[in-house]
Length: 187
Image (cartoon, rainbow, N blue to C red; front, side, top):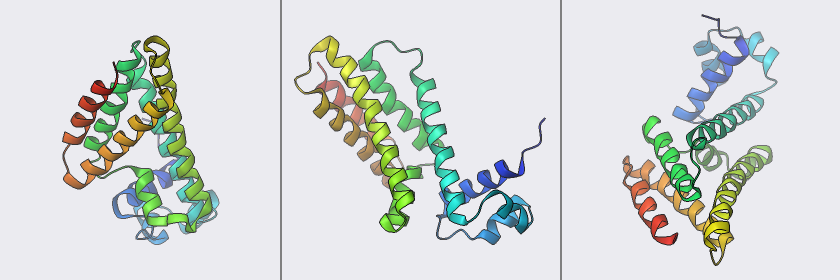
C-alpha cells in the first residue's frame, strides 16, 4: 500500500476537523498534532490556515462533482438524472451522519468576511445550479417545459432545502418529499 503524502495527509486531517468541528474551532496546532507532522512541514505545504481552507474546499468540490458524475453515468433519461441528483445529495447526507453540506457549513461560519472563501462557495453552488439547469434543459427539449430556467431554480432550491432540513432533523424524509414534488412538477 502506498504511503500517504504529507500534503495529502494535512488536507485530509484538516478537512475532517473543519467539517466535524468547524474552521474557527480548529487550530493549526491540532492539525499538526493529528497529522503527526512538524510545524515546518505544514508551512512548507500551506502558507496559512486560510490557504489550507482553500485546498479543503477545492478537494471537496472535486469530490462532489466526481461523485455526482459517477452517480448519473449510466442514466439516459433526463428525469431520472434529476432524481439521481436528489438521491446523490441524500446519500451524501446519510454518509456524513446528517452533518450537512461542506459548503453551506463553511459559508455560515465564515460569512462574507473572507471574500476568497465566500466567492468560492457561491461559485460552487452556481456550478451545482448550472448542472441542474443542463439536465432540466435536456428534459425540456423532449417535453417542452414552459420555463426550464424556473424549473431548474425550483429543483435546486428544493434540494438545498432538503439538505438543510435533513441536517436539522437527522432524517432523510425531506429528500423523499422533494422527489415526490419534482415528479409532480415534471410532466
